[in-house]
Image 1: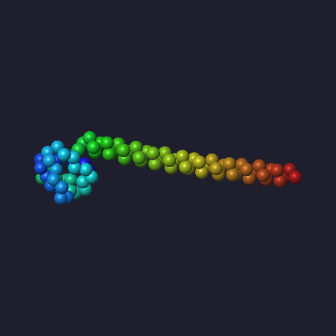
Image 2: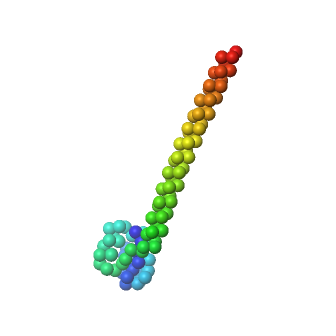
Image 3: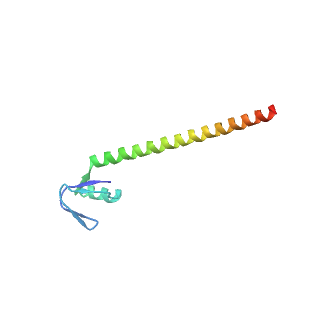
Length: 92
């Protein structure tokens, strides 16, 4: 989770000033900082991250579907080739 510091705050040994971005904070740490009132969620960063995750998931699903379709097409092509070869044998 990404946060914005609401004042001077020390997190993981590093000082952040009011308005500074605190990137890649563990959820439990972020919730604690928010509860103490020293940080807030960086909505813009979080929405961008969620959009990127959704885009990545969609791309993975599309790649999987394309791979399945390719496998199916290859199997059908092999089957047709075998059928054609069998027909040629029967003619002889």
